[in-house]
Amino acid sequence: MSESADNDYDPGARAPSGSREASAGLFERLRALLGLAPASVRDDIEEAIDESASAEFTPQERAILKNVLALRDVKVADVMVPRADIVALASDTPLRDVLNLFRTAGHSRLPVYEETLDDPRGMIHIRDFVVFLASDPRFGLVNMPDGTAQPAPSGMEMPLSEARILRPVLYAPPSMPALDLLLRMQASRTHMALVIDEYGGTDGLVSIEDVVESIVGDIEDEHDEAETPIQAVGEGVFVVEARASLDDVSEAAGFDFASLAEAEGVDTIGGLVTASAGRVPGRGEILKGPGEFEFEVLDADPRRIKRLKIWPLAARTAMAGAAAAPTQAVNAGGRQ
Image (cartoon, rainbow, N blue to C red; front, side, top):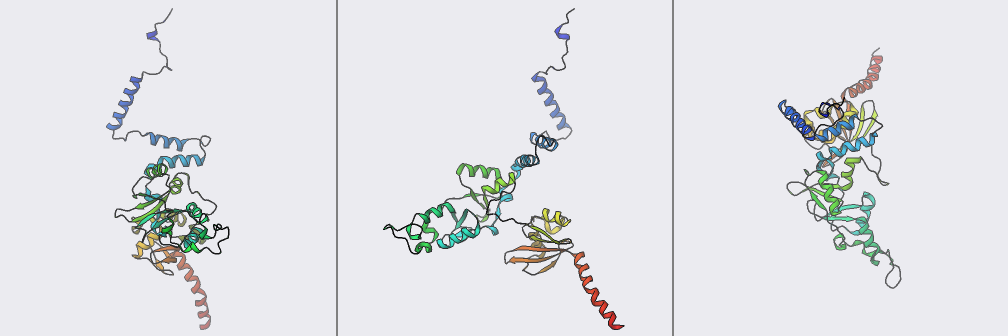
């Protein structure tokens, strides 16, 4: 006996699209009624990445995928080189000094300014600079028109502004999303941007490499020197670069420096020490605190701290007690 199709039930059959949409809408209204946040595809992807088996994604792939998802929250201020660390050239710098700075700085592009960094004029690319030097006999790199060699690079005292080889740079506010800046760099084929504050002053510098590194991690080339911002030099004693982040120093020292009152609005250990002291400490100064630590300034200039040595106060007290013990023993032996 045949059965009516109306009475058949196929568990594998798909529900009509209208039913699915109605169910989804009902579910979202229920979430809203309960005060729950609406579902996010981004959150779902992040959860899927976290829960995925190691066979599906390598650790490096998971890290890159999560960085891509987090890129929308990364601002230009998060990836920029701060103003104090910018290597730049004045427009009246002699070409001889430009060559020396390219040699020592290890950068292929350098910003150029008129009087201060707040008055930028553009940037110079090392390729343009080398082509300019190699194409003019005044610099001794090619023969003179009569075929004779130039005895000395007489043109190397020429100011940079006369070479007319500057290229434009982009300008971006600190609050601009890093992804938007990356797209602007791609569209304009300009790999350098100056970060300008609300008053028009130069706040920092961003290269296309800085933005890409926020996704794939540090990219080092043949000229990059390995840096260790935090070095353990004893039991609980560390030598740190002042620009090391509070999170990294906290992890190394086993103390949450970010929880201190002085850490409000501060990102680096050097900034924390400066905020605690209320000034820029000089080289050789030793400060007690912030926290249960002693900070020795190993290197600094009038504008900023560069390197610090961090001692737990308990360790310093123990060392002082150990150093005093032999003296006390000698004194006791003399009295006997």
